[in-house]
Amino acid sequence: MPIFVFSSVIPAPVEKVFAFHESPDALERLTPPWQPAEVLFKDAGLQVGARVELLVPFGPFKARWYARHTHYEKNRLFVDVQDSGPFKRWVHRHEFEAIDHSTTRLTDRIDFSLPGGPLIDFFGGWFARIQLRRMFAYRHKATRLLI
Image 1: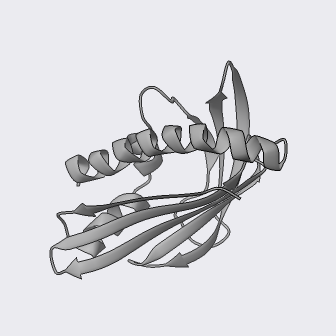
Image 2: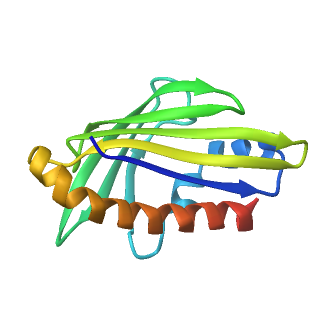
């Protein structure tokens, strides 16, 4: 299965970076303008069991994306898993590591699989990684600017 990892250093304490991700409008503020996901429903917070429903562009179509949070450790990580949506599999770990008292390493680690089987993963995985790199570069830059 394809794996994607994007990591960067944020010049802010881990508590502040994590709190930003917990803010009620964080998802909307981190969504790139070229990939306008519409939030249809979301539970408050990132704790285990919290759910979100999105309408996301997927090629020329829009797809509903249902995800739920499966792990939560304050100031360390949270994990969301796609229950149904455009991917065959999607497990997204958001990791926060304090480098020192004023610097955080933010890492997004995604284990995903495209619909259509191993051949599609092999040939389409590289394209998906390019799109993910662009999206997470935007998200990490937005995090730096907004906190």
